[in-house]
Length: 366
Length: 259
Image (cartoon, rainbow over all chains, first blue to last red; front, side):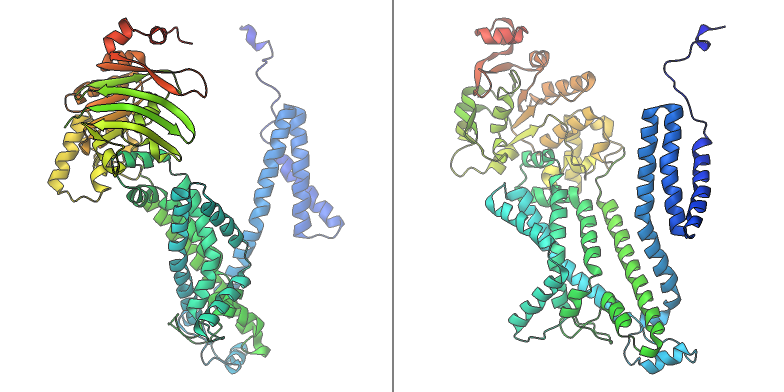
């Protein structure tokens, strides 16, 4: 009865049926397979053809039915989805490869023994199935954890105090500007240069040109960590509202107490995740470790004396100089397992940082 | 507890820029004094010089005398931190510490200064401060909940409780109600009326009705133009400022014919 049903609404435009876009997607997959078959089928070309077809055809169809604006909207949306998938490919592929190649090598023996006394004879026997795979990464895990911990202990106080100076005290002065500039320069230092710096620094100060310990490696890593910690902590301190500082001053609280008890607690969750990122950045370094901590096959708990191995250098040596050149696959198995353990350690660190961030985060809720 | 403030020939600067020129006034103890005037006329700047909060901004400083019961706040060797512990401040936007609970917020002045306080004294201080800020009944069952979970008006009263917990002589309020709804505003205004029993209250406000409602004396600040310093035009009992001001500018402003 009502007249409005007869009048076409000016508020609506054509609507594509719900099944249309998925149908185009299916069509793109099929057609993509056909096109790919023309030039020699492979999953890669299939995915590229299917993706391209979909991103071009689906928005065109939508734009014909629903208008230009909706067409452009769906084009950009599909592009963003596509970019997301492309960005995920390396991540998924790395995790997949490391998991599939690393899990077979993982064992209690691997985690609890070092490479001391393991020779090509053992590996050859293992390759022939005549014995178990001996040797492990215990010494490398210890080295990685100790060196990274030491590097963190060195760089977090320096980095945090630097950022506090920059945010709370520098006031755009020449010193603050110089620090910011040099921190930026430090960010770009190649890791091997940091390693050589630490090696030569300790060579000069101890007088022993071949001074290599976990501590030297930790210094090299902290050269890499400090700029990351400074820049991140600086950002986090800057976003603490000035009102909170003023509120604290207005209560008759001194500046340093305000910084320690109001500013840092408010920013601590961000600072913690920044520190984790910095750790994740350096824990996989290989080159600076080789020139600063050397490489060993046995356990060394003392980071202040003697050479140390870390997981990255362990992986490097297992691949480049297999324990048994004729049965390199055994060394490869150990290297992949070490890579998996390294990834797990970084992931655990991330989880810990998230827990810290959650624990310290400004409280919400009523 | 309450002290009077005498301001003599005070000039306030931001670097080279003279923001407020030559202010002389006497603020009585146990009274509410309101500062009114157009935006940018320097009333907030002037208020912040009364507890040396002005100088936390880079390059900002003040010349002249501010006497708190005869003691010059800008004298040689005066510690601004001690000044601020005697002259508290409430800001325009409620700013409870987000990492702290309601209870911790009230105790912030004590805890942040690492002063030891027994549990029972702390409980007493929390209750008396929150009662003083008319907030006790609303929050007594959730003192351990975060302060940022309260409504805007409650947060502002929490901030007032936080300032009175350090037992200041003077409380400065910089547009304390401008971010609040009328009901919370009323609550804060009632509170101001009670506070003047014990404290000297100075309030900056854009709301002339508010100035008329809460204050005993009113100071009108004005600015001659952009880039010119703000000046104290007239300072008199509130009734006089609103009913028969001496200055033409004051009359124009309070009657809404400003500009």
